[in-house]
Structure formats: C-alpha cells, structure tokens
Length: 491
Image (tube, rainbow, N blue to C red; front, side, top):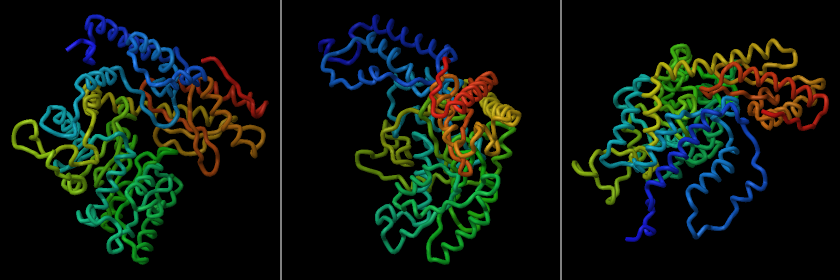
C-alpha cells in the first residue's frame, strides 16, 4: 500500500514536531487567557473563509493549524476566560484538555463490549453513588448534557408508570396519553422540551408558581396534583430544581420527595450545575433531600470544570433504566467471554449505541484535583457572588433584583427614567460583552430585565468582579447619557 493510501502520517517525525507545536500553542492560549478579550465578534471576512467549497486535495496540517489559531481560537464564546460570566458554563482545565487528547487517540466507542473504558465509567458511577447517597443498585450514564439527561429521566418515569408495554404500544392506547408532570415555573426550558420529545406535549407539564424564595410552591403543587386526579388524569412525575436557571434557587428537595412518595410519583431532580454542590461541605446541607430522588441529572462540565461535553444521569434503580432502554439485537449478541462480554452495556441504559469516552476526562479531573479541592472551587464561586452582591448593594446606581442563592447574581443599572431601564440594561449587556472585559448574560426577573452574572469558572477571582463593576458603571453612565449608543472599550 502506498503511503498516500492511508490516513496515517507519511512522515511521523514531521507530524510529531507539528503536534508538539499545536499542543504548546494551546497550553500558551490557556495560560494567557487574561491577556485576551473575553469575547469578540468574528469579522465578516473571517466568516466568509468558512463558506468554501469541498476541498478535494489535501492541506498541510501546519497551514490548518495556523488558520485555527488566527481564525477560530480568537472568536469562540470565551467560557474558558475568567471574565466570562454569561450563562452557566465551566472553564475546563489543561488536565481535561490533555485527557481529551488521550480520548481521541484511543477513539474508543463505549456503547458496550468488554473493554476497560467501561470500567472507568463504572468508577465514576461508584463515586456518584457515594456522593449522592445512592444504593449499589443505582445506575448511571454519561450523555451530552442535562437536557438529554432530563429527557432520559422522563422516559424512565413513563415506563415505570405504564409498564414496559408502552415501549411497544405507545401513549395512544387506552387513554394513556393523559399523564401529567410537575415542575417549578423557574425550571430550565429543557424540562418542557423533554416532555415534548417524549411525546406527552408541553401542555402535560404543569409549571407550578414559585414562592418568595423562587422555590416551587408546595401547596400549589399538591393542589395541582389533586385537580388533575379529579379530572381523570394520571400524575406520574415531579421534577425539582437544584439551582434554577435564572437565580440559582434550590427547591425544598426533602418536601418534594415526601410529596412524590405520598402521591406515588417519580421524583427527578434537575441539578444541571447545582447538584455538584454536594462536593462542598458548606453547600451540601442546602441540597438535603437530593439523596431521596429517583433520578438526578447534572453536568460535570459546569461546576465540575470538565471540558465539554460531560452530562450525567444517575438513577436509583438501574433495573428501571434497563426496562426503559434495553433492546437486544442479533448483531449485539452478548457472550460470557470475549469482546462481547460485560453485559449490561451502556447502550442498554440510554438511547446511544455509539458513545464517546467522556468518562476519561471526568476521571482525570476528579482524580487529579480531588473532591475536596473541587468543593472549595465551588464554594469560591459562591463567595464571589456574595462579593458582587455587596458591591451592588453599596452602589446607588445598581439594584439587586433577586436573592443570591448560589453563584448567580441578577441586578440592573439604574438610569434616570424607569420606563427606559429595560432598554438601557439590554444595551449595557451588549456593551459589556463587546468590551471584552466581562461577559454577563441576561434574563427577566419579576418582569424586569436583569443583567445575569453566573460565576462558574475556577479562574475567576475578585479582580474580575472588580473589573465587571467598574465597566458596568462606566458603560452604564455613558449609555444613560447617550441612549442607544454603542460604547466599546479595550480589554
């Protein structure tokens, strides 16, 4: 076979040299993050370079790497940067980056079969059972993120309620489409999406009002369940939140567990980022009741600082997970020995047959830093949120709009006209993002536009909060003086 007929390098020595350069460049990139803007929009001419026709001839790796460094790396969303405070996105680590490289080198498909990568995934399961107080019968599965993990939980709850025949007959048999689920009005939109994808429709999800602490109102929940039963419907699922999307509130999980038990409902917790607060002795008590859940969805790529993507679903009774997804086929025949041993396989516990080795970067991250250090990092993000809160409360031009529960702070800049505050703060968020200094996102709290700061990155410190406050006041003053103007500043 000629060298040009394989995808392996024809000159390994030259390839190794270029690979070393690429790795060094990425380590430099990570080390020098503070010297870069958090975010910058890609110029039109850069975007145009990614509208080319299909290449038929090879391009030298060195040339492609140069394009990566100049045309791609400068224009990412910036969540690795310590000034990134928009949405809830982890910062990753150099350790995780190297682990991703190892994963790609192995190119393991971990949908099943007899291989050590599945033992690594089982190791993470053992750790999560320990962390959340789940029994040895619990099952776990890596997925892309909590959106898919919540979807999986809805399907497991459905099968548990209706029996495995629903997998064959669907929801349109004997009125079974009348199942109803319940969550907080502050829950993430992916909960509603999960009901949609599962075939129930979003109207089957009851979005229960919140109390003054932005938790699900327990009395309103029990009233809604009773009303649905009286109407001939079948309540089957209640979803609690451990860190709501807008303000980071934690539902009273113990109370929800009790309601779910009394009503014989599946109790699922959307803990996308908040669930890993269990790593912190200071935050874990606020998650009391999480150990009572039937299932928990969360992301290692948020507070866990694992590179994207690494979502997870933990299920108290693995047998129910298998009932929902296991679908043996002749080409997936299991054996007691050989490569087809090791049943059950991960593909028996979720929808994916082809799966990447997400467990490796998670294992490297947890083992390298240890649970205690990760817990301290989580505590620090919450302490920084309190530091920001104190600055806001001490500044007459700023107003806090919601309690600071964990690491999310919602506030606004006060201008001279109450009627124009929403537009002023909307412009201010964009100005902050375009400044390259700090990048918050936005939301609506009590029908008021809010600047939403989510502090997740382990690199963020008080100096980054100080820069955010300084830029907010300076840009806010400029926009209040000249409404609708766009104010840019060097990072």
